[in-house]
Length: 171
Image (cartoon, rainbow, N blue to C red; front, side, top):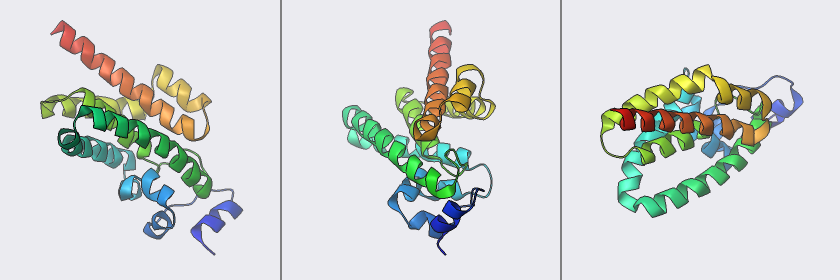
């Protein structure tokens, strides 16, 4: 019996494996090219993928292409998160990290330059994503499905960028 069939027959979510990830392109995307398979803190590994991929890609392709690509990646991630969530039996399974990848890519792209800014943004984003204060927690509790998976991280990214905008403005 395949992992996907087992998840469909079980009411409990399954633990994804490399074999599961490679069984469908949506799983490769939503599991962050394997970062979601990390044995601990998969969201942190997905966030690191977003940071380093952006630092590598954005200078190569330029802002216009990068932001169009990020918008396309968001739409593809919506589809992938939905497919993988259904296969795993839990729409916001911890192994689904494409939401963190996209959110951190947005943050990194909006804070170009010094790695120290991006490192602090990484820490603030992870804190907000884990603790889920205010609107982040509301979105996490109330918006379900693939859009809900993506929305709470986009709100955390927006709040991270807002804090940095205030910090830059004040100091």
